[in-house]
Image (cartoon, rainbow, N blue to C red):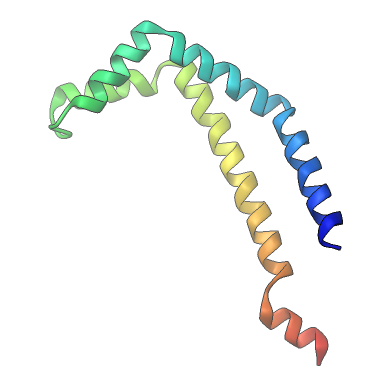
Length: 104
């Protein structure tokens, strides 16, 4: 049974790696990391100490409003909620209380 489950998990990961959303995320990440202007903004943002300054807030806003970042974050959120749902379903399968009540 374990081998069968692991095979299916491998299949799931392969399918996830080839789904349009993940492929788009990978492409966006490449675009983000190759965009010098955006890289400079991110570097400046990471190195700022005063997180309450007007400059920090404006810089953060500028980064978040960038179309590449915005689209990437949206896809990232989708993926996050998909993983949460998967975890929820897996937890139901291994829930001890559920198993005990089924055996009684």
